[in-house]
Image (tube, rainbow, N blue to C red; front, side):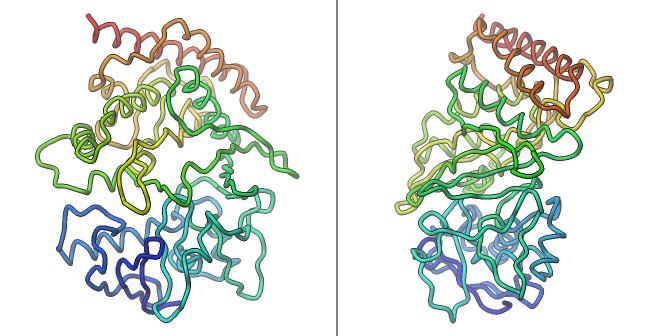
Length: 388
């Protein structure tokens, strides 16, 4: 599949590029439609910067190297790397409206996109990967989804749902997604709602959520937002808010502060500029609003099985801007949504939902709930300091 490709945004041609036999970017033409490039335009007109950004986009568009079942997928598809798998699925996904095909092919967006068309299943949670055989090319959103957890898209009529598995012995991440969802519902914070189910044969816990975009709107990552203009001596928190306000999203600070608060309460260690962002109109490119909060699985000591190793430390560390979640609390304003009378409800949500996981000890459930209670007290202290 090496050769010359064209990147499109829906039916709009964006830029032509060439890949070598290892599916590495080797040539990039001038943009056909600069405004629809899949990366920010702080390097507008800089060909070398565009090349670096496009190469990075192709690399990150495919399955990450840390994906637990990537070796299996590459073996079954007889693919050398994620980029080859990506281009076999036309670089389509269920987050935005970008895709690519060879320049000598005649293909229409309306005939292949995953929002309007049924798609093949590539991942089976009970057998890891569905055998394709005969070097068949599978075009499926399962093969272009970010993150290290095993994931699978399913369609039910017009709706698309994402299933995610947990890792290691406890498989705790699906339970954490449900817990975070329930906490945000209590506080009336906009979020992607997660439910819990089990794989059919191995009874493996999975979380399920509905796709947050559709054929008319798309998700654009926080990194794209930050890359729309130069840094100009501002921290990423302030710069992100300012950029959003310039584009008409006036409640960017309130929404970002909600995310920071929730990340502190649940101890999220995986918030980064790829799992928060904005929603925009796919035709006009108008920025509409901040994306609902999603992807909260790496929290609540998900990777610590032994409760005795959990220190009574209320802070945690994530992956964007200031590392400490507690430090970021100093940035936010007094949140009007916070209701201290819900503290016991939140602690109970954490405890009872963790307890549903037969792989997690009762002692760990108790200790994690206790730390969440301490975090809520610290958060209340921060709130009170802000309003005094």
